[in-house]
Image (cartoon, rainbow, N blue to C red):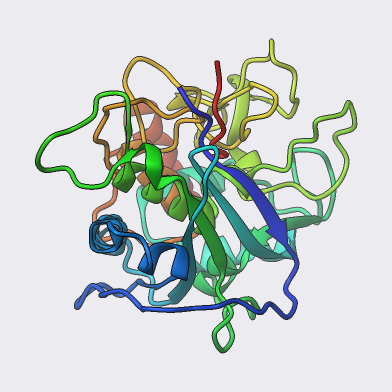
Length: 324
């Protein structure tokens, strides 16, 4: 397997890129993802297949999200690893982020998640007052965010298409990775789910800004998890740890906001699965929902505890590198 998505977070600043050959867009989605294809793609003999695969992944994500923003992404190819994203972000206070979540809450999952996020000046994870949030998510919450002004993208996504099945039709190489799944993984990270959505340090220090997904890391009911220890238990939960929706990756060197790779492949797995054709599923959609996006179809709460927590709250208120 190959690690999904090494990422780089970039503070908003001037960025000069060669942006060529804009791809086709979904006609009716309120979320608009505008792709720009670098010459490393447009000059490739398989350019049409690569662009089509990326556009298919974009169309599926656009159809899932009704938040009205435009996200600009520059796509290029690379010759090592599997995929990576370099994404703009900015800081926002935890209290302002929570207030934005309250004003944008539309689902039972939102209500559940908010009921476990205290209304305080410091975050409940490590006690700092600010968070790192991607420019795409900031704009989704109504915040001013640089990064895609003019021709500057919110992120640059690089894909190693030489080890990918470029189309889901026709002959498939079982040892290759699905282009659409890899592209979706990286786009999720631009939207702030997976990859840069956790700021877990690789050292013993746990101070500093957290990422949005760090608010939903638990090791047990009522017990938050914020450690990069490979032996730690960390899972995604929106009801205070009562329900383990999916385990987080705890392998140092892969992304801590990605899922632990298991027997049933998911788009946001930390390690890719060769031959698997997968699209964004319930866990990714739940994460997109609770970090601040409005979904066209909200995932059903996955057990009674989630339903009850949501009702109470309403009433109360890839790094992709080769791996041996």
